[in-house]
Amino acid sequence: YFRGRKELFKGLAMETLEKDWTAYPVLHIDLTGSRYTSVSDLEEKLGRHLSKWESVYGKSGDFSDPASRFEAVIETAYRKTGKKVVILIDEYEKPIIDNMNAPDLMEKFRRELQGFYSVIKGMDEFIRFAFLTGVTKLGKMSIFSGLNNLDDISMDAEFTDICGVSEKELKTCFDGSVAELAKACGMNKEECYGKLRTMYDGYHFRKGAAGVYNPFSLLNTFKAKEFRMYWFETGTPTFLVRYLKQGRYNLENIARNKVSIETLTGTNYVSPAPITLMYQTGYLTIKSYDERFNAYNLDYPNEEVKAGFLNSLSQLYAPALIDGGLSVYNFVEDIDRGDVQGFMDRFTAFLSGNGYEIQGDLELYFQNTMYVMFKMMGLYVRSEYHTSNGRVDIVLETDKYIYIIELKRDSSPETALRQIEEKGYAKPFQASGKEIVELGINFSSQTRTIDGWQVKESTSTSHQ
Image (cartoon, rainbow, N blue to C red; front, side):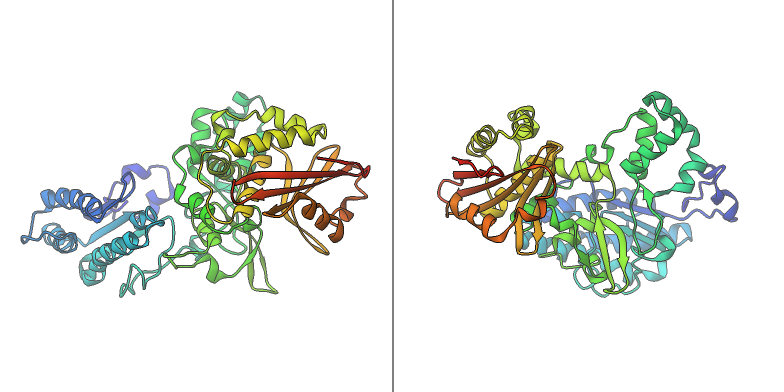
Protein backbone atom coordinates (compact mmCIF):
# COMPACT_ATOMS: atom_id res chain seq x y z
CA TYR A 1 0.00 0.00 0.00
CA PHE A 2 2.68 2.52 1.01
CA ARG A 3 4.61 1.71 -2.16
CA GLY A 4 1.60 2.86 -4.19
CA ARG A 5 0.96 -0.59 -5.68
CA LYS A 6 -2.68 -0.02 -6.64
CA GLU A 7 -2.76 -3.12 -8.85
CA LEU A 8 -2.39 -5.36 -5.79
CA PHE A 9 -5.73 -4.11 -4.44
CA LYS A 10 -7.78 -4.64 -7.58
CA GLY A 11 -11.34 -5.62 -6.71
CA LEU A 12 -10.96 -4.68 -3.03
CA ALA A 13 -12.54 -1.74 -1.22
CA MET A 14 -9.13 -0.11 -0.86
CA GLU A 15 -8.90 0.28 -4.64
CA THR A 16 -11.57 2.98 -4.59
CA LEU A 17 -11.09 4.30 -1.04
CA GLU A 18 -7.55 5.50 -1.76
CA LYS A 19 -7.30 8.27 -4.35
CA ASP A 20 -3.65 9.34 -4.49
CA TRP A 21 -1.66 6.07 -4.19
CA THR A 22 1.49 7.96 -3.21
CA ALA A 23 4.66 5.85 -3.11
CA TYR A 24 6.79 6.29 0.03
CA PRO A 25 10.21 4.84 0.87
CA VAL A 26 9.51 1.76 3.02
CA LEU A 27 12.01 0.45 5.58
CA HIS A 28 10.91 -3.07 6.56
CA ILE A 29 12.74 -4.89 9.37
CA ASP A 30 11.89 -8.55 9.97
CA LEU A 31 13.51 -9.97 13.11
CA THR A 32 12.07 -13.46 12.58
CA GLY A 33 14.00 -16.32 11.03
CA SER A 34 17.14 -15.83 13.14
CA ARG A 35 18.46 -17.09 16.45
CA TYR A 36 19.77 -14.49 18.85
CA THR A 37 22.35 -15.91 21.24
CA SER A 38 24.45 -12.76 21.51
CA VAL A 39 24.05 -9.05 20.83
CA SER A 40 26.35 -9.46 17.82
CA ASP A 41 23.67 -11.69 16.21
CA LEU A 42 21.20 -8.81 16.44
CA GLU A 43 23.73 -6.27 15.19
CA GLU A 44 24.49 -8.51 12.20
CA LYS A 45 20.77 -8.86 11.40
CA LEU A 46 20.18 -5.11 11.60
CA GLY A 47 23.37 -4.49 9.64
CA ARG A 48 22.10 -6.49 6.66
CA HIS A 49 18.93 -4.40 6.51
CA LEU A 50 20.86 -1.15 6.88
CA SER A 51 23.38 -2.06 4.16
CA LYS A 52 20.54 -2.83 1.74
CA TRP A 53 18.90 0.55 2.39
CA GLU A 54 22.21 2.40 2.15
CA SER A 55 22.76 0.88 -1.30
CA VAL A 56 19.35 2.22 -2.40
CA TYR A 57 19.26 5.68 -0.79
CA GLY A 58 22.96 6.37 -0.26
CA LYS A 59 25.19 6.41 2.80
CA SER A 60 25.51 9.48 4.98
CA GLY A 61 28.39 9.57 7.43
CA ASP A 62 30.75 6.87 8.62
CA PHE A 63 28.73 5.32 11.43
CA SER A 64 29.22 1.79 12.75
CA ASP A 65 26.50 1.37 15.39
CA PRO A 66 23.03 0.32 14.13
CA ALA A 67 21.15 3.21 15.76
CA SER A 68 23.26 5.93 14.11
CA ARG A 69 23.10 4.18 10.72
CA PHE A 70 19.31 3.83 11.06
CA GLU A 71 19.00 7.53 11.80
CA ALA A 72 21.12 8.40 8.76
CA VAL A 73 19.15 6.06 6.46
CA ILE A 74 15.83 7.63 7.45
CA GLU A 75 17.06 11.12 6.65
CA THR A 76 18.81 10.19 3.38
CA ALA A 77 15.72 8.28 2.18
CA TYR A 78 13.64 11.38 2.84
CA ARG A 79 16.14 13.72 1.17
CA LYS A 80 16.47 11.51 -1.93
CA THR A 81 12.77 10.83 -2.52
CA GLY A 82 11.18 13.95 -1.09
CA LYS A 83 8.72 11.67 0.72
CA LYS A 84 8.51 10.82 4.38
CA VAL A 85 9.60 7.32 5.37
CA VAL A 86 7.40 4.37 6.36
CA ILE A 87 8.88 1.99 8.97
CA LEU A 88 7.53 -1.56 9.40
CA ILE A 89 9.01 -3.88 12.05
CA ASP A 90 7.96 -7.53 12.48
CA GLU A 91 8.44 -9.19 15.91
CA TYR A 92 10.24 -6.22 17.38
CA GLU A 93 11.01 -8.09 20.63
CA LYS A 94 12.13 -11.50 19.31
CA PRO A 95 15.74 -11.29 20.60
CA ILE A 96 14.34 -10.70 24.09
CA ILE A 97 11.78 -13.52 24.19
CA ASP A 98 14.31 -15.91 22.66
CA ASN A 99 16.31 -15.52 25.87
CA MET A 100 13.70 -15.58 28.62
CA ASN A 101 15.81 -18.10 30.52
CA ALA A 102 18.83 -15.76 30.50
CA PRO A 103 17.96 -12.48 32.30
CA ASP A 104 21.39 -10.91 31.81
CA LEU A 105 21.27 -11.50 28.05
CA MET A 106 17.69 -10.25 27.93
CA GLU A 107 18.81 -6.99 29.50
CA LYS A 108 21.60 -6.58 26.92
CA PHE A 109 19.13 -7.07 24.08
CA ARG A 110 16.69 -4.67 25.74
CA ARG A 111 19.30 -1.93 25.87
CA GLU A 112 20.37 -2.54 22.25
CA LEU A 113 16.79 -2.48 20.96
CA GLN A 114 15.90 0.52 23.10
CA GLY A 115 18.72 2.51 21.53
CA PHE A 116 17.71 1.42 18.02
CA TYR A 117 13.99 2.12 18.40
CA SER A 118 14.58 5.48 20.10
CA VAL A 119 15.65 6.74 16.67
CA ILE A 120 11.97 6.71 15.65
CA LYS A 121 11.14 9.48 18.13
CA GLY A 122 14.13 11.63 17.21
CA MET A 123 13.40 11.38 13.47
CA ASP A 124 9.67 12.03 13.74
CA GLU A 125 9.77 14.89 11.21
CA PHE A 126 10.95 12.47 8.50
CA ILE A 127 8.51 9.63 9.25
CA ARG A 128 5.11 9.24 7.60
CA PHE A 129 4.05 6.08 9.46
CA ALA A 130 5.60 3.45 11.76
CA PHE A 131 4.02 0.08 12.56
CA LEU A 132 5.55 -2.43 14.98
CA THR A 133 4.19 -5.91 15.68
CA GLY A 134 5.33 -8.47 18.21
CA VAL A 135 4.39 -11.67 19.97
CA THR A 136 4.31 -10.03 23.39
CA LYS A 137 3.82 -6.55 24.71
CA LEU A 138 6.83 -4.81 26.20
CA GLY A 139 6.15 -1.60 28.08
CA LYS A 140 7.32 1.79 26.96
CA MET A 141 9.58 1.98 29.99
CA SER A 142 11.35 -1.27 29.09
CA ILE A 143 12.09 -0.97 25.38
CA PHE A 144 10.37 2.19 24.12
CA SER A 145 11.52 4.54 26.85
CA GLY A 146 10.72 8.08 25.79
CA LEU A 147 8.93 6.95 22.64
CA ASN A 148 5.63 8.50 23.67
CA ASN A 149 4.34 8.94 20.12
CA LEU A 150 3.51 5.22 19.78
CA ASP A 151 -0.15 4.23 20.00
CA ASP A 152 -0.90 0.70 21.27
CA ILE A 153 -3.89 -0.51 19.23
CA SER A 154 -3.90 -4.12 20.53
CA MET A 155 -7.29 -3.75 22.27
CA ASP A 156 -8.78 -0.73 20.50
CA ALA A 157 -12.38 -1.19 19.35
CA GLU A 158 -11.54 0.21 15.91
CA PHE A 159 -9.00 -2.52 15.23
CA THR A 160 -10.47 -5.66 16.85
CA ASP A 161 -10.77 -7.50 13.52
CA ILE A 162 -7.64 -6.18 11.83
CA CYS A 163 -5.69 -9.43 12.24
CA GLY A 164 -8.36 -11.98 11.35
CA VAL A 165 -11.14 -12.98 8.99
CA SER A 166 -14.67 -12.26 10.20
CA GLU A 167 -17.64 -14.59 9.71
CA LYS A 168 -19.10 -12.12 7.22
CA GLU A 169 -15.85 -11.98 5.25
CA LEU A 170 -15.61 -15.76 5.24
CA LYS A 171 -19.07 -16.20 3.74
CA THR A 172 -18.78 -13.24 1.37
CA CYS A 173 -15.28 -13.84 0.01
CA PHE A 174 -14.64 -17.56 0.50
CA ASP A 175 -17.98 -19.28 -0.03
CA GLY A 176 -16.69 -20.98 -3.18
CA SER A 177 -13.56 -22.19 -1.38
CA VAL A 178 -15.72 -23.58 1.43
CA ALA A 179 -17.84 -25.47 -1.11
CA GLU A 180 -14.70 -27.03 -2.64
CA LEU A 181 -13.35 -27.95 0.80
CA ALA A 182 -16.67 -29.52 1.79
CA LYS A 183 -16.68 -31.65 -1.35
CA ALA A 184 -13.09 -32.80 -0.78
CA CYS A 185 -13.85 -33.73 2.84
CA GLY A 186 -17.15 -35.49 2.13
CA MET A 187 -19.41 -33.11 4.03
CA ASN A 188 -22.07 -30.57 3.12
CA LYS A 189 -21.28 -26.86 3.13
CA GLU A 190 -22.94 -26.08 6.46
CA GLU A 191 -21.02 -28.90 8.14
CA CYS A 192 -17.84 -27.49 6.63
CA TYR A 193 -18.58 -24.01 7.98
CA GLY A 194 -19.13 -25.57 11.40
CA LYS A 195 -15.82 -27.44 11.28
CA LEU A 196 -13.96 -24.29 10.20
CA ARG A 197 -15.56 -22.41 13.08
CA THR A 198 -14.54 -25.08 15.59
CA MET A 199 -10.99 -25.37 14.29
CA TYR A 200 -9.95 -21.81 13.46
CA ASP A 201 -12.48 -19.23 14.75
CA GLY A 202 -12.81 -17.76 18.23
CA TYR A 203 -10.22 -15.01 18.59
CA HIS A 204 -11.54 -11.98 20.50
CA PHE A 205 -9.32 -8.98 21.23
CA ARG A 206 -11.76 -6.86 23.22
CA LYS A 207 -14.87 -7.33 25.34
CA GLY A 208 -17.93 -7.72 23.14
CA ALA A 209 -15.88 -8.01 19.96
CA ALA A 210 -16.97 -10.46 17.27
CA GLY A 211 -14.76 -13.50 16.83
CA VAL A 212 -12.31 -13.74 13.96
CA TYR A 213 -10.65 -16.67 12.20
CA ASN A 214 -6.92 -17.31 11.97
CA PRO A 215 -6.26 -16.26 8.34
CA PHE A 216 -3.09 -18.35 8.00
CA SER A 217 -4.83 -21.59 8.97
CA LEU A 218 -7.95 -20.70 7.00
CA LEU A 219 -6.12 -20.04 3.72
CA ASN A 220 -3.92 -23.12 4.09
CA THR A 221 -7.01 -25.25 4.69
CA PHE A 222 -8.56 -23.99 1.47
CA LYS A 223 -5.30 -24.59 -0.40
CA ALA A 224 -4.68 -28.13 0.87
CA LYS A 225 -8.40 -28.99 1.10
CA GLU A 226 -7.95 -30.69 4.45
CA PHE A 227 -8.11 -29.71 8.12
CA ARG A 228 -4.78 -29.59 9.94
CA MET A 229 -3.02 -27.57 12.64
CA TYR A 230 -1.33 -25.26 10.15
CA TRP A 231 -0.44 -22.53 12.63
CA PHE A 232 1.57 -24.97 14.75
CA GLU A 233 3.27 -26.54 11.76
CA THR A 234 5.08 -23.23 11.21
CA GLY A 235 6.78 -23.57 14.58
CA THR A 236 5.54 -23.25 18.16
CA PRO A 237 7.00 -20.56 20.44
CA THR A 238 8.88 -23.03 22.65
CA PHE A 239 9.89 -20.25 25.03
CA LEU A 240 6.32 -20.28 26.35
CA VAL A 241 5.98 -23.99 27.11
CA ARG A 242 9.44 -24.09 28.68
CA TYR A 243 8.58 -21.06 30.78
CA LEU A 244 5.42 -22.77 32.01
CA LYS A 245 7.31 -25.95 32.82
CA GLN A 246 9.87 -24.11 34.93
CA GLY A 247 7.23 -22.44 37.11
CA ARG A 248 4.56 -23.60 39.55
CA TYR A 249 1.64 -23.53 37.14
CA ASN A 250 -1.28 -25.91 36.88
CA LEU A 251 -1.75 -26.46 33.16
CA GLU A 252 -5.52 -26.85 33.23
CA ASN A 253 -6.45 -24.09 35.63
CA ILE A 254 -4.14 -21.54 34.05
CA ALA A 255 -6.72 -21.03 31.30
CA ARG A 256 -9.69 -20.73 33.64
CA ASN A 257 -9.19 -17.56 35.60
CA LYS A 258 -10.81 -14.16 35.70
CA VAL A 259 -8.17 -11.61 34.84
CA SER A 260 -7.95 -7.83 34.78
CA ILE A 261 -7.09 -5.64 31.82
CA GLU A 262 -3.76 -5.00 33.55
CA THR A 263 -2.98 -8.72 33.43
CA LEU A 264 -3.79 -8.98 29.72
CA THR A 265 -1.62 -6.00 28.87
CA GLY A 266 1.18 -6.84 31.30
CA THR A 267 4.63 -5.61 30.33
CA ASN A 268 6.99 -7.26 32.84
CA TYR A 269 9.48 -8.77 30.44
CA VAL A 270 11.77 -10.19 33.16
CA SER A 271 9.16 -12.30 34.96
CA PRO A 272 5.83 -12.10 33.11
CA ALA A 273 2.68 -13.75 34.42
CA PRO A 274 2.08 -16.99 32.49
CA ILE A 275 -1.51 -16.08 31.69
CA THR A 276 -0.28 -12.77 30.22
CA LEU A 277 2.13 -14.62 27.95
CA MET A 278 -0.52 -17.11 26.87
CA TYR A 279 -2.93 -14.33 25.95
CA GLN A 280 -0.37 -12.21 24.14
CA THR A 281 0.98 -15.19 22.17
CA GLY A 282 -2.50 -16.26 21.03
CA TYR A 283 -2.93 -19.41 23.11
CA LEU A 284 -5.71 -17.80 25.12
CA THR A 285 -8.30 -15.28 24.03
CA ILE A 286 -11.16 -13.32 25.56
CA LYS A 287 -14.33 -15.41 25.80
CA SER A 288 -16.51 -13.18 27.98
CA TYR A 289 -16.44 -10.15 30.24
CA ASP A 290 -17.73 -9.94 33.81
CA GLU A 291 -19.08 -6.43 34.41
CA ARG A 292 -19.46 -7.04 38.14
CA PHE A 293 -15.76 -7.74 38.70
CA ASN A 294 -14.47 -5.77 35.71
CA ALA A 295 -12.66 -8.93 34.67
CA TYR A 296 -12.13 -11.03 31.55
CA ASN A 297 -12.75 -14.76 31.23
CA LEU A 298 -10.19 -16.46 28.99
CA ASP A 299 -10.02 -19.79 27.21
CA TYR A 300 -8.41 -21.43 24.20
CA PRO A 301 -9.76 -19.77 21.03
CA ASN A 302 -10.41 -22.99 19.13
CA GLU A 303 -9.55 -26.66 18.72
CA GLU A 304 -6.44 -25.98 16.64
CA VAL A 305 -4.87 -23.96 19.42
CA LYS A 306 -6.02 -26.24 22.23
CA ALA A 307 -4.77 -29.42 20.55
CA GLY A 308 -1.58 -27.77 19.30
CA PHE A 309 -0.69 -26.37 22.70
CA LEU A 310 -1.32 -29.74 24.32
CA ASN A 311 0.90 -31.37 21.72
CA SER A 312 3.67 -28.87 22.51
CA LEU A 313 3.36 -29.57 26.23
CA SER A 314 3.48 -33.31 25.65
CA GLN A 315 6.91 -32.95 24.07
CA LEU A 316 8.16 -31.70 27.44
CA TYR A 317 6.03 -33.67 29.88
CA ALA A 318 5.36 -36.90 28.00
CA PRO A 319 7.74 -37.12 25.02
CA ALA A 320 7.14 -40.85 24.58
CA LEU A 321 3.61 -40.01 23.46
CA ILE A 322 5.14 -38.21 20.50
CA ASP A 323 8.07 -40.44 19.57
CA GLY A 324 6.05 -43.65 19.75
CA GLY A 325 7.76 -45.09 22.81
CA LEU A 326 4.49 -45.20 24.74
CA SER A 327 1.56 -47.38 23.71
CA VAL A 328 -1.37 -45.00 24.02
CA TYR A 329 -3.76 -47.78 23.04
CA ASN A 330 -2.71 -49.97 25.97
CA PHE A 331 -2.98 -47.07 28.41
CA VAL A 332 -6.51 -46.23 27.28
CA GLU A 333 -7.54 -49.88 27.32
CA ASP A 334 -6.32 -50.27 30.92
CA ILE A 335 -8.27 -47.19 32.02
CA ASP A 336 -11.43 -48.11 30.12
CA ARG A 337 -11.66 -51.54 31.74
CA GLY A 338 -10.65 -50.39 35.23
CA ASP A 339 -7.28 -52.17 35.22
CA VAL A 340 -5.47 -49.88 37.65
CA GLN A 341 -2.62 -52.36 38.10
CA GLY A 342 -1.92 -52.38 34.36
CA PHE A 343 -2.15 -48.61 34.06
CA MET A 344 0.11 -47.94 37.06
CA ASP A 345 2.69 -50.46 35.86
CA ARG A 346 2.86 -48.67 32.52
CA PHE A 347 2.86 -45.20 34.06
CA THR A 348 5.62 -46.09 36.54
CA ALA A 349 7.74 -47.59 33.76
CA PHE A 350 7.17 -44.50 31.63
CA LEU A 351 8.29 -42.12 34.38
CA SER A 352 11.31 -44.26 35.23
CA GLY A 353 12.41 -44.24 31.59
CA ASN A 354 11.79 -40.55 31.01
CA GLY A 355 15.20 -39.02 30.38
CA TYR A 356 13.89 -35.45 30.33
CA GLU A 357 14.90 -33.14 33.15
CA ILE A 358 12.24 -32.54 35.78
CA GLN A 359 11.97 -28.85 36.62
CA GLY A 360 10.09 -26.97 39.31
CA ASP A 361 7.83 -28.51 41.95
CA LEU A 362 7.99 -32.32 41.75
CA GLU A 363 4.38 -33.00 42.78
CA LEU A 364 3.03 -30.40 40.37
CA TYR A 365 5.27 -31.76 37.62
CA PHE A 366 3.75 -35.24 37.95
CA GLN A 367 0.25 -33.78 38.20
CA ASN A 368 0.80 -31.87 34.96
CA THR A 369 2.34 -34.94 33.33
CA MET A 370 -0.72 -37.04 34.14
CA TYR A 371 -3.05 -34.28 32.94
CA VAL A 372 -1.21 -33.94 29.61
CA MET A 373 -1.07 -37.70 29.10
CA PHE A 374 -4.79 -38.19 29.75
CA LYS A 375 -5.67 -35.26 27.49
CA MET A 376 -3.48 -36.60 24.69
CA MET A 377 -5.29 -39.92 25.00
CA GLY A 378 -8.60 -38.16 24.39
CA LEU A 379 -9.87 -38.80 27.92
CA TYR A 380 -12.05 -36.45 29.98
CA VAL A 381 -9.76 -35.18 32.74
CA ARG A 382 -9.79 -32.31 35.21
CA SER A 383 -6.99 -31.25 37.51
CA GLU A 384 -7.39 -29.52 40.88
CA TYR A 385 -11.12 -30.23 40.78
CA HIS A 386 -12.88 -28.12 43.42
CA THR A 387 -15.16 -29.76 46.00
CA SER A 388 -16.74 -28.30 49.13
CA ASN A 389 -13.85 -29.64 51.23
CA GLY A 390 -10.86 -29.04 48.99
CA ARG A 391 -9.34 -29.72 45.61
CA VAL A 392 -8.80 -33.12 44.03
CA ASP A 393 -5.48 -33.37 42.19
CA ILE A 394 -6.86 -35.36 39.22
CA VAL A 395 -10.37 -36.50 38.25
CA LEU A 396 -10.50 -38.85 35.26
CA GLU A 397 -13.83 -39.97 33.81
CA THR A 398 -14.67 -42.74 31.33
CA ASP A 399 -17.96 -44.33 30.30
CA LYS A 400 -17.85 -46.75 33.24
CA TYR A 401 -15.40 -45.33 35.77
CA ILE A 402 -14.56 -42.16 37.66
CA TYR A 403 -10.98 -42.09 38.93
CA ILE A 404 -10.23 -39.80 41.87
CA ILE A 405 -6.46 -39.41 42.08
CA GLU A 406 -4.57 -37.78 44.93
CA LEU A 407 -0.81 -37.22 44.66
CA LYS A 408 1.71 -37.00 47.49
CA ARG A 409 5.43 -36.35 47.63
CA ASP A 410 7.70 -38.12 50.12
CA SER A 411 4.68 -39.34 52.04
CA SER A 412 2.66 -42.53 51.43
CA PRO A 413 -0.18 -43.74 49.21
CA GLU A 414 -2.14 -44.50 52.39
CA THR A 415 -1.96 -40.82 53.34
CA ALA A 416 -3.23 -39.85 49.90
CA LEU A 417 -6.16 -42.29 50.14
CA ARG A 418 -6.98 -41.13 53.65
CA GLN A 419 -7.23 -37.54 52.38
CA ILE A 420 -9.69 -38.64 49.68
CA GLU A 421 -11.82 -40.33 52.34
CA GLU A 422 -11.61 -37.63 55.00
CA LYS A 423 -12.30 -34.80 52.54
CA GLY A 424 -15.17 -36.68 50.92
CA TYR A 425 -13.79 -36.16 47.42
CA ALA A 426 -15.97 -38.98 46.05
CA LYS A 427 -19.29 -37.55 47.24
CA PRO A 428 -19.98 -35.29 44.21
CA PHE A 429 -19.74 -38.35 41.95
CA GLN A 430 -21.76 -40.91 43.92
CA ALA A 431 -24.94 -40.25 41.93
CA SER A 432 -23.19 -40.71 38.58
CA GLY A 433 -24.02 -44.41 38.32
CA LYS A 434 -20.37 -45.11 37.55
CA GLU A 435 -17.86 -47.12 39.53
CA ILE A 436 -15.65 -44.84 41.60
CA VAL A 437 -11.95 -45.66 41.85
CA GLU A 438 -9.92 -43.83 44.50
CA LEU A 439 -6.19 -43.86 43.75
CA GLY A 440 -3.44 -42.61 46.04
CA ILE A 441 0.03 -42.16 44.55
CA ASN A 442 3.27 -41.20 46.28
CA PHE A 443 6.31 -39.79 44.49
CA SER A 444 9.85 -39.87 45.84
CA SER A 445 12.03 -36.76 45.64
CA GLN A 446 15.10 -38.99 45.79
CA THR A 447 14.20 -41.38 42.96
CA ARG A 448 12.01 -38.78 41.19
CA THR A 449 9.42 -41.38 40.33
CA ILE A 450 6.53 -43.35 41.90
CA ASP A 451 7.51 -45.35 44.96
CA GLY A 452 4.04 -46.56 45.98
CA TRP A 453 0.36 -46.47 45.12
CA GLN A 454 -2.87 -47.81 46.55
CA VAL A 455 -6.37 -48.08 45.13
CA LYS A 456 -9.82 -48.32 46.68
CA GLU A 457 -12.81 -49.10 44.49
CA SER A 458 -16.45 -48.33 45.19
CA THR A 459 -16.94 -51.95 46.30
CA SER A 460 -14.63 -51.09 49.22
CA THR A 461 -12.08 -53.67 48.18
CA SER A 462 -8.48 -52.56 47.94
CA HIS A 463 -5.19 -53.89 46.74
CA GLN A 464 -1.67 -52.65 46.08
